[in-house]
Image 1 (cartoon, rainbow, N blue to C red):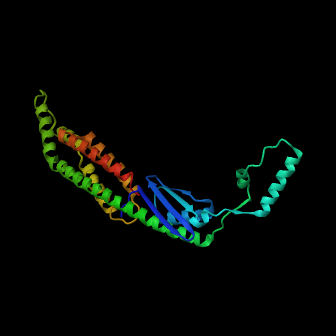
Image 2: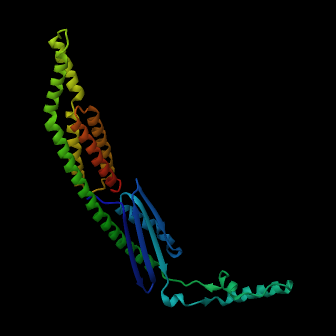
Image 3: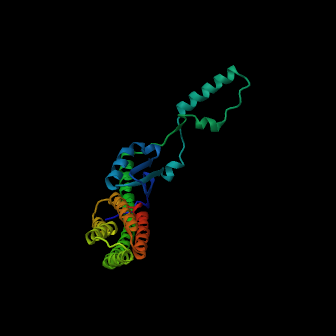
Amino acid sequence: MIRSMTAFARQECENSQGVLVWEMRSLNHRYLDIAIRLPEELRMLEPSVRERVTARLGRGKVECALRYRLPANLQAAINLDEDNLVRLLDACRVVEGRHGNVAPINAGEVLRWPGVVREVEVERAPLMELALSLLDLALDELIEMREREGRQIREILEQRCTVMSGLVSRVRQRLPEVHARIRDKLLSRLAGLEEPLDPGRLEQELVFLAQKMDVDEELDRLDGHIAEVRRVLEISEPVGRRLDFLMQEFNREANTLGSKSADADTTRVSVELKVLIEQMREQVQNAE
């Protein structure tokens, strides 16, 4: 199933351990590029987060951000380390004794001193387990959105393939008429020459001209590429790179068709094909 690389997911959970919020955003990228932002309490989760994202996504620039807040009852509590506070105040009095013009002690500065306020300790093991479970839910949501947009991309590509197939058939049906018109035009010009022409040489020139303007091979390859796009769209694995390569092949054949064109209608078809290919390429750039 084709997936888009553009998606967003958000999952939030609150319990006695606190509040966890995962936000994930993915954009199109040539490879899988993962950027992870974690709170200090859960910094050790980064290898596990990267492993889980890599296992489920193939391409895209993926931003994973986790926010954590303590429970409300712990946020309001301020626990002082009395021993450290006493040592700090004693040190301040020693400084005051040696320098009489020292500024008075500011309580706010004292509270910001490392070790004066005890950090609230939480059980990290269940918190890590909860964070990883919530990550799986966020990945589920992200992939669901990528698949939903992928279905839209597939629909657009299938529509363009149908139109392209009709254009190729139109050119192929007109080939005998085009060849006959070129032959008649050449013969009419040669008829005005005073010197008679060698019939064998004339046939050689006609064959050479027909080969130079023959687009059967290009039309066959275009049909083959259309069939390959439809086949690739049925594959369950990421197909963005394959489709991108096929767009290059499409463009090459459309250019050759235009350069070999022997009538205005074939030229118009070549231009229409290029427009369709560009529309498909824009969609493929966002396919995983």
